[in-house]
Image 1 (tube, rainbow, N blue to C red):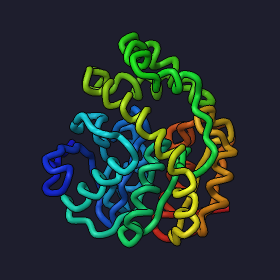
Image 2: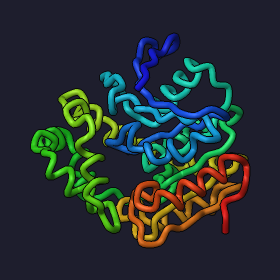
Image 3: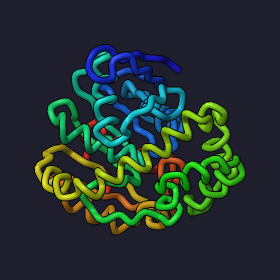
Image 4: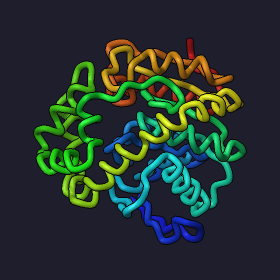
Length: 283
């Protein structure tokens, strides 16, 4: 894993960690809430033969810095922009999973000339109907969320992650929880997770109409991949989002929950590879 310290702007000095592989046009992979760069390891391997693939630890997650900040989508998009500047990348394609999809869309809306293509994997996108789970709503309550976070244990996290799969495989669930467990569950990480869970609600509620209007004008190729049995982001959400992008195609994955790139890695990563080289998604 490599470290990059941002220079200049409001996020000057912020340290971001990432993994990279391959050579070719740049593709940046953005994980979801509680995720980390290495969760994309199979996608990195699949795309590296034709791309420079960069999987980023978003600020507040993985090994990246975890400052006290307003963890809204604008904050993550600003960090992504500083990261691309630091690497000297003019334009890239973005692939976002879950919350990472919202970050990708936010960056594409604010910097359309720097984004070539966007792929959204089980993504939650602001501007459209999305019902947060009861557990998520409880976590967002001040004091109660902190108390619940203090009770977190690996076995509880694994049980929650397993419910996000259609057919959970123990190796996948263990990796998503156990990898760098201490770094990802320490006090600073818990605070960043809670801040993200709370602050992004503003984007999804207060700025819903703004996002919806802007998305209708985003003239970029968009590929959406969604599991038909996704319990975290309802398939109806994906259908509504796909209908609103001017140039979107939606690919469904059967017998699949919230992690298509893990549950059906070969098929999904094949679709991503074809899309990112400028070919339409196979029908």
